[in-house]
Length: 298
View 1 (tube, helix red, strand yellow):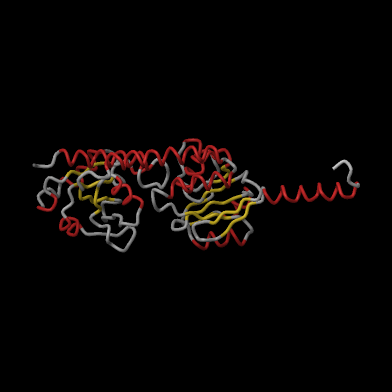
View 2 (cartoon, rainbow, N blue to C red):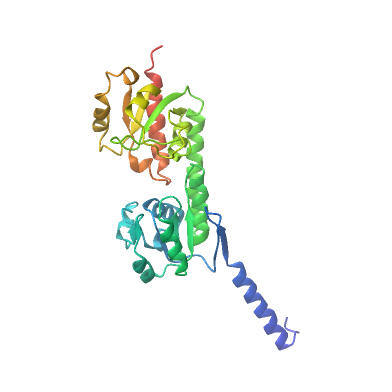
């Protein structure tokens, strides 16, 4: 290059700078099917759901969080981050003051109008929908890419995949156990076959008695639960301890469809948030189902 005329050297150098700038762009497609382009890895991030703050942190980008949704509480340091509202209403003025490089929203958890308004204000919004166990490592890697923390994100994703593989190998082919999963007790709410919790039940060799219901989180009657003859009831959101959860179902033990059916507690933070911690919930579910198998009458 030293033999080139000066104007050629500057032209080549300018071309190199332009190429370098172009190559640093990050292009990704979110779970709405919309393409997002970042000129550089996000240095400041706002998340619009507690589970997303946890995902971002697990992807190695926790230090880049400048705004989180109300009730974001894990890991503990997330509690110190500014809050920007919740799923019912995002505080747009607060978000504007934070000037994030990236906002990560929840497709089925946030108001579509809030997402649209943030985009109209010029923010780069990446919307995710962690609806299966396989989505967790996929999103960890994607968030790591958007924040420039690929190494940490890849490590977390691999650990999650390894944990799921180990549970599937151990429990996936065990005799099926009919499961009723309770999201809430009064009224009775459960999950269908498209919910991530159904993935967990299946992973452990269980069968969700309401898998075929169209609604993602259907309201069901006690009579329909009794008619479905579950072998175990799992849940925990409506109680704070295993004995408290079990006591809610002991009153129904005289019904033939619920006689001798155990109600077994699962920490809701470990299974009802779509984050890597669902692996802890899955281990608990697998252990519960295995105890049901062990106590079956010959």
